[in-house]
Image (cartoon, rainbow, N blue to C red; front, side, top):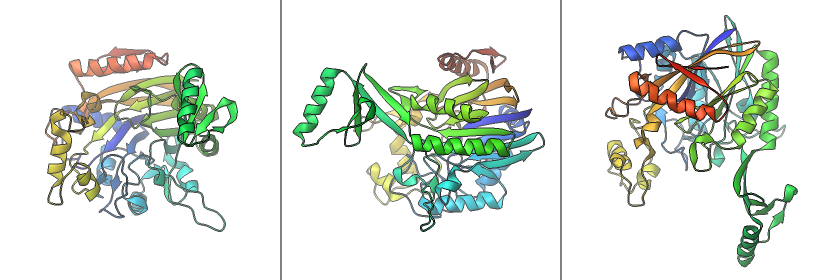
Length: 426
């Protein structure tokens, strides 16, 4: 039996070790009390090595190198790296961050100098067993995907990808209209298997209207191989999936390809699936006595105190070269008001500032004693003080846990709430 704590997205740009209020100390005690403490490192930790990419995951997230020590101080010993910020500063930023983590002996997975390295498990040795971590992301810019090496060509540095296909299922009469529209544009449809017709990168089929997503077969095959390999090399296998994709317009539910993929991972030997990415909570499923946490939400969210940002993001908001980071954060935030295009920056929604930390044990029979602790990142604080988690209390804790209760019930999972803690009935 091994004890595990899992958290969601960590974007940390300010010191974490200088605070000592009681709800914070209580949270640290939970993180430090187990064999395995996991977080998704959704940031680079460099002195701005590399060059800003043409696209970023929203904000170019860089924290100073000493942030790696801050995470170790908190008690974390296992880190996911595959996410949409891994290539914010290209291959240079990715490789420089890996070098810092490796020098400190920090166990991390999900990126590499080629796809073989990015797919490979990382291993954490504890007194109660060896744990493998395989980290991947379905949300990334196209250039972020690592590439395989060949005997005659080096591979491409990047992250471990989980691609997916989107298919639009429409009524017969709608399909006729779609065909006519593309024919008018001189585009010839391509017939594929299962009655699918594709127009450029769009795929359509006839049936009950729906948006259907399916995991990429090649990625599933290769990731499954990594899980089977890890199962023979370790006592427990953890799979980390970074995924923003919602189920249609419902941002609190995962896109259809995600449960399909997660079930496959468990079938191949994974002992727990740790989901993160949308920056808000999604439900928990118990599948074959293994926990699938579709999104734990944010753990640390300090994306308004990054010291330097590239021109591209200033230009996006119409700011000149004289603007400062504070100018950017001010105009981007607008106190939650929409800009001239009707766009409202997402961080002014309280859902992004409330999350959970999961605490459980794994053994031969699966998961045991799965507890969820609600946390708040204190949205009400000024940007210089918000984004650091503390245990939620009172009505705040009740509200967060009841939301998780509701979201998990969609997967047949029941959660009992007692004394500001949720206990998942497994």
